[in-house]
Amino acid sequence: MGVFGYGKAEVVIKALSGSFRTYGPDGPGSEYEVRADTRDAVVEFVARLGEPGADDAYLIHDGRALRRDLLEDEKAPDHALFLAIREDFGYLGYLGPVDGQLEDERMWPVGDPRSPGTHGTNNVDYPAGSGLPVAEVVKALDEFRVTGELPRSVSWTIGRA
Image (cartoon, rainbow, N blue to C red; front, top):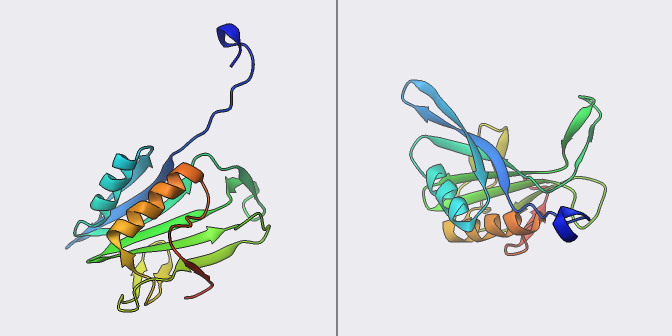
């Protein structure tokens, strides 16, 4: 950065934003907005998703560019990361470009073959065999927070579900 604030500085945003909802015995509960800009905030967020009644979350990276949504004629994120915590497994889903491609890919982790499939309210079905240990989900989310790219700490497969 230049002297006295003149010049140009590159700002690197390392944060996730999103939302999730809770459900109780009487139906929908509250909707929560989330912003995780540290590893500790990622850990806390994942823990909250593991609480009874928490549904899946829809996340974006705040540092990625927006693109024009042709159906809505407005700017929208070029990606989405979906996350659910169910008992001993964490589930991820990714929709967006990968490695500079223009086409969007729907991707799921290659997880524990013993993990059952599950459903979330973001119209996402997490396939059987895609569940990961929760610690791996925390690592992948924190990697996504830092890089803004598809986490490479887990293996991914295209188009299951």
